[in-house]
Image 1 (tube, chains in turn orange, purple, blue):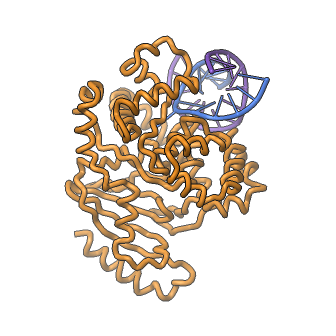
Image 2 (cartoon, protein in one colour; image 1 turned 30 degrees about the vertical axis):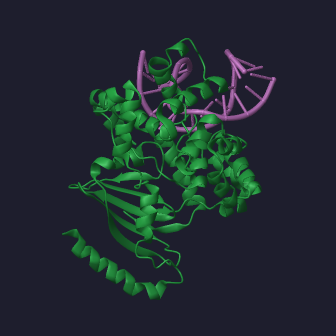
Image 3 (cartoon, chains in turn cyan, yellow, orange; image 1 turned 90 degrees about the vertical axis):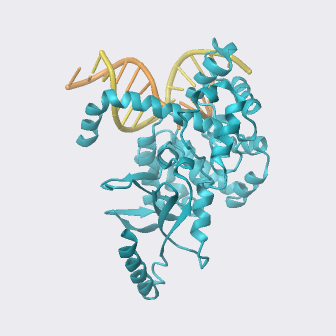
Amino acid sequence: MLSVSFKCVVRLQFAIVPIYYYTKRMHIHQGQIAVNEKELNLDLTLLGGQSFRWEKLDGSECKTTYKGVAYNAYWELTQDPKNLHYTVHGDSKGSSDADFYDKLLKRYLRLDFDLNENVNEWRKLHPHFEELSTKLKAVRVLDQEPLENILSFICSQNNNIKRISTMIEWLCSKYGNKIGHFHSKDVYTFPSLESLVEHQDELEVQLRQAKFGYRAKFIAQSVAKINEFGGTKWFENLRKLSYHEARTELVKLPGIGFKVADCICLMSLNHLESVPIDTHIFKIAQSVYMPQLKNVKAVTPKIYEEIAENFRNIYGPYAGWTQAVLFCSELQQFQTEKGVEKSPSKTNKKRKK
DNA sequence: CACGGCCCTGCTCC
DNA sequence: AGGAGCAGGGCCG
């Protein structure tokens, strides 16, 4: 099937590599990872608001293909019932390891985490999870790069996925490195801290012009502060710290409160007990888990902690993942119901634009 | 400490 | 047509 013609492409690519090696240093690689499709819902995992760099490849008739950038590489992903197939373009950084990208993708999607087994455990822990168990989707918590995660979630406040994606796309094309040209678009890496620091003086003005709004200042200041704190080494240290310690550090950055800090702890610092409490989760907590909060108007820091601790007490060390599954599954159902009613007008407006 | 007002922009609703 | 209201928060008073 497709792989036959693709192997030709691979060979051609390798033949050309020596010629433009010093200008491009790009490698193309394809592989597959054994993973049951019931253990990995790419749609909700990649497009559900954790990362903002993935989209469906339109025009893929037989199989849905997802394309996106992660860890400085451009990926295309498809699934069959038993396998995840990938094509990746990236700078392999001298690693001639055949399974370098296998490991990278496994890490990104946390494929070592046995979701099925954990879901079965979570079902025993609270009737709410048990009730929803038939509707639950295989949402996986990503293991992302901290800088991308931090800047993306500073953008996320008072915002929606579509606009966040546009903003991040702009940031990458402005300060990232070009990986290549795919499906008639130039594709860029997420900017390095160094690249952003280098443009520190112009950063806020540029972001303002690019319509980041009041988030422009937060990003510019956070970049400076992350650099001051030690950049990559600071990130590594945040992974080693306890969850609470890591969050205490993160909220030192402007534009980062408890909720965003918890998203970062969960999605790029390997603190899976972190439970981000947004307005939606707050309402679920009020109606299902903590009825005593039904008269509470706003999520104050104290209330925030109370709710998050409650989720951790119920669901344990992976409480953040539990919440992600609940949140995405409920949200998807909500959107599907809404989408059936409104799809005609929505489609029209999208096409106009 | 809790609360309300405010922040940029873009979209939806009316 | 065009303004209010709001979106998966955070900061400041």
